[in-house]
Image 1 (tube, rainbow, N blue to C red):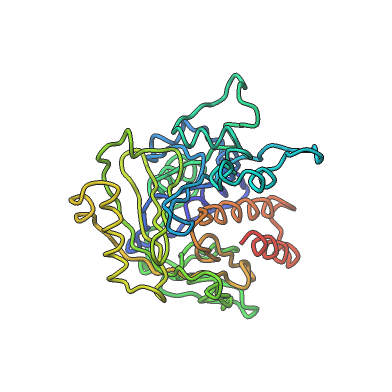
Image 2 (image 1 turned 60 degrees about the vertical axis):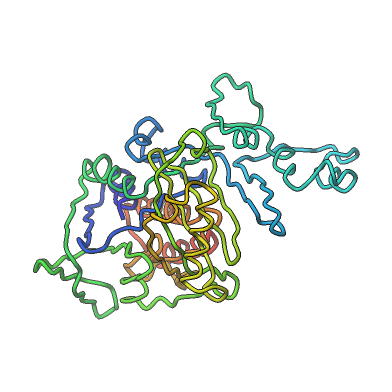
Length: 382
C-alpha cells in the first residue's frame, strides 16, 4: 500500500490520493529479498542507497544461493545478477555446456555461474561488495547487478514518512465495513467504521491474499497455480545473529529440505528465515520440527528452539484480471507465485510502475483499452 501511495504521490501530482489502513491487520515482516528491478522503482522515487538503507535494516544482495537442491548432496551453486558474458565465437569451445561435456569432473554444475557471470559470482562467494567506481571489473554494473535484503515493515514506513505524506498523500486509519456501487458496477463509495464515507474515482486493492476489493467486490476469478506449484505453506521466524561476521552475507540462501526449502535473508540487525513447504507431503507439526532441526545446523540449539515462529498459508495464482472497472489489484491482492526467486515485491513494484505510466497519459483519462493493456502486461509478468 505505501509503495503504491509513494509512487503515485510523487509521480502523479495531478491526483488526490488517500490511503486507508486497517489498525488490526499487520504485515508478515520476515524480511524481503528483492531482485535488481527494484532499482528502477527506487530511481523513480529519487532514492539513493544512502537515503533509505540504514533506516530499513537493509543489506546488499548480489545473488541467490541454492544449497542441497541436487540429489541431497548438500552442494551449492550461485544464481547471480548479471547479463552475463556474450560469447560470439561459435567455432571453438566457448560455452560451459561444451566444457562440461568434455571435462565433467572439472566443470561441475556449480561452475556454470562462474563461467557465465564471473565477477558477481565471485563477489557472492567471497561475501564482498564494490561499487566498481573505477570500472576495473568488466561485465559488472553495481547499480543493476545489485539488489537488497530489506525489512518490509520499515521500508513501508520509510516510504510513508519520506515520500508519500510529504507529497500530499492523506492517511486514514480505519476498517472498511461496506461499499456501494454505481448502476454500471463501479465502486462509488466506501464506508469506514469511524462513520466516514469515502468517494473516489479509482480504488487500489492492497489487502493481500484476501483481495477484498478485486476478488471480493469485483469478483475477479482466482486462477490457481497449485497444479504446478506445490509449496502452499510456510513457517517463518526472526532470529538474532550469533556471529554476524559469518552469518551476514550478500546473497539470499535457499536450502532444500524434505518437502520444500528454507530461505535465509540476512538483514542488518537480524536474520529473516522460514521453511516453505507443501502440505501435501508433510504435516504442519512435522514441518516445524524439521525447520527447527535445520536451524540447529546453522547456529546454536538454543537459538533454534527459542525462535518465535508464525505460520503462513499461501495462495499461488493470480486473479483473472488485475484491473476491473475502477478497481486495481497491487501485490498479493492480484497474484503470487512461489517465493523461490523473490518475485513477490517484483510483481508489486512492476505493476505500480505500469499503473503510474497509464495515469500520467492523457491527464489520467482511462478507457477500457488502458485497462486491457494493464491486464495483459500484468499477466505476462506473473
